Length: 160
Image (tube, rainbow, N blue to C red; front, side, top):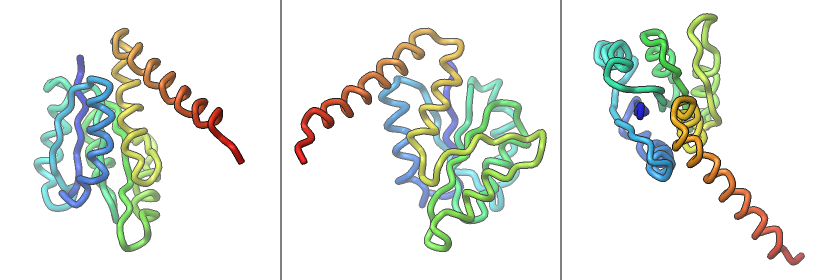
């Protein structure tokens, strides 16, 4: 099975990244996490992106706040699907990161999820990988059914 790359711009992003880790573990999707900055370690970020496919990755999730150039920098150096997670910062509540992540130039796409939307990013990465993996596809369907069951139980218990 292909693995998912989790690239954060700073260790301050770890609480958000952990939500993706938890979801990938639950879905039994292998992953690797790294800290690379588009601005402070551009050479290492580029090297990761350029070798990601040959190193067994099927999708990459990038987590960054503020200027949030990481997903774009990674996407510019690979043809693998890149998913950007804008991370909420104290400056503009993540709006700056959201706009930076979602506004990519034509030809360099970055799929973007909600601010701090790490779990959805993990699900999207798993869905991409599941295109070639029937067992993972079934785990995703089971996960969705479990989520629906949880909502229906809450509905049945509703007493207002």
